[in-house]
Image (tube, rainbow, N blue to C red; front, top):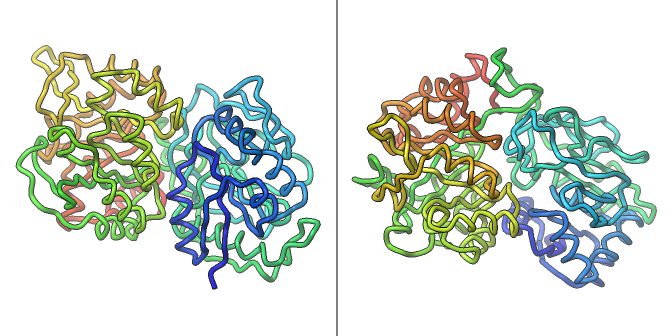
Length: 486
């Protein structure tokens, strides 16, 4: 019989990824808001996506705050994920004046302005060896705030983003991860599995019988290749290679400048294949949703999520908070918005308030003008707006966009390489991560746009038609000194 794991509903979390991850290791997840259940259940997960203050308000309204604090102090098997770790602490600079659960002494602070914020991507995690639940390897992070140092009595693992911070805490059968184990591939699923199995050996005092914890081989434990160039990630951070699935009527398609679409395969099948090849994330764009005035197909998102243990961004036809919520509940980890944000920029403010900056992606499609700059294009490239793309990127990030998916309309599908001038201009203008998109024909194009300033690269045609694999691209980049997750 599958081990039941209770998931506490915080009101801000994307539960679909956590549920999918637990199911993939053979557990039986169930969501609850019942404080008594959370207090007494054998195993409980506290997921977290969104803002510290909003999450604490929800926990207090439902009585889950006291139930969680009680079980953690008693050492009952509990897993806190991402924002979940921060909620265990005393307070956070994200929401001054709001108290946390105070079961982990310490205050949550923001990353420094010297690095991209949010931190979105894969970073190396180094365990201190103090707990069988902690293991070194690559993890996926999506956070703007962090715990600088562990309190006494807790084992820890560390990462570095503008300085060392706590990547995970463990004490007995209580585990708190600042990263997302459910989105960290095979290695992350190993963390989930060890925690579930550790619950079988938990004692009343919170101890763990070590033999119940079975080691899972690391998918990538070696330190990453690093470049001497100042742009490239250092201290274990890696650039992201992201396949894109342009979807129409439930099938993956690809064209040139958003037109002339031809079939490229099944979304779930391609998603699974790309994860096996080493993709760091996946993007699904419903290319006909906005022109046809409908929302992205939620069922496609569910099918893709069932195949993935890496992050999933979904866009196309997102016009409201309700659209975004439906996609997050179906399995998206981030939501991309383009046309609706241009029509009503306040959508970005509301998305960030409801779901957090790390969930809010500005999908910026830009076309070069006769004057030599770039203007925003919307409605799948069919409408030019006259809005300066670089200025729009600045405004969007001020409003709450935590990442920019930047597509050159002129280069899309042309295989003539990314618009490096556009990428460099936007990357210089904002402090959030920038994903370059549009025009790749080979790994040399990915290398060149990374040198131009991109934090991640997105491609479609070169992967869909079997010209090369994600692994091929990563080997090419690593051989030239770029830090990639092998």
